[in-house]
Length: 65
Picture 1 (cartoon, rainbow, N blue to C red):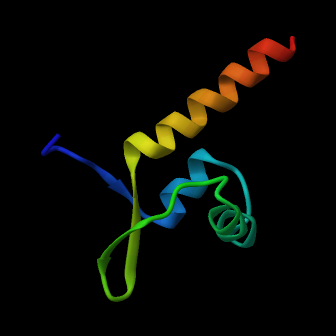
Picture 2 (spheres, rainbow, N blue to C red; picture 1 turned 90 degrees about the vertical axis):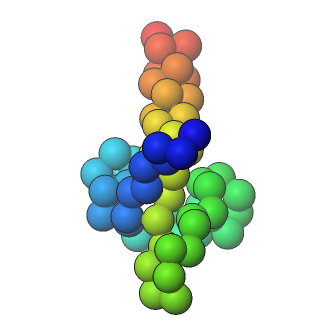
């Protein structure tokens, strides 16, 4: 687990196509995971958490077909 990769917001939004405001609202509502503070001004998200969101979305798309 020592090889945890982190993604900054622009990288997250490339994978999950929502606006910044929608992303932050989703965090407040518990839809999206909270970020990890890497420093006072830098927040990032675990790549595994973002991958899990993408996999759930793909699964939902396939179920709806």
